[in-house]
Image (cartoon, rainbow, N blue to C red; front, side, top):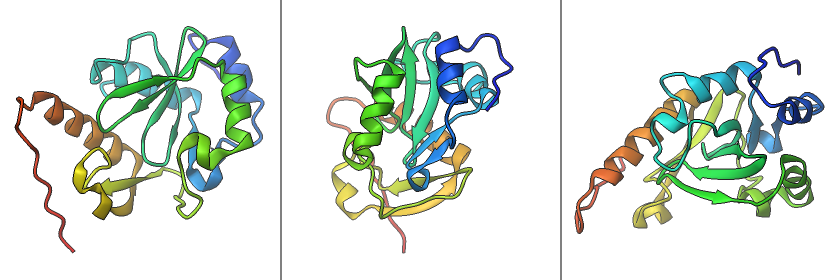
Length: 173
């Protein structure tokens, strides 16, 4: 993959550019192209514009098939749990993070090889995993941007809840 954008750090360009495949583990890990990185970093759906824990300098480079985002902050990999906006630092460079991914992708990424998606799609859990009712979640493949926008709206609604308030999900068969 060739990166044309000079704003993407060299170590990220080199790392992703050396990958033979950017759609791994049946879509369980999807690396972004330079156009996709720019879209998720600078456009109206840029993650830092919607999630309080994501900074404008954080560079999104991949996601899992449930729409959770991996980004670089000061050369360290972080994960954004897109449903509730929580972030988790891995305290690893992208190269070290990827080596751990390759050793045990299901455990390290918290994915299951029972699922797969087509390029341009992600998996939606409904009700979302961040809710008690998620043990009965229905998993369905949806377009990438549809899930990203759903997670942004869900995150905003959850943040607006007052103490004791709840969101209700109705699952229709």
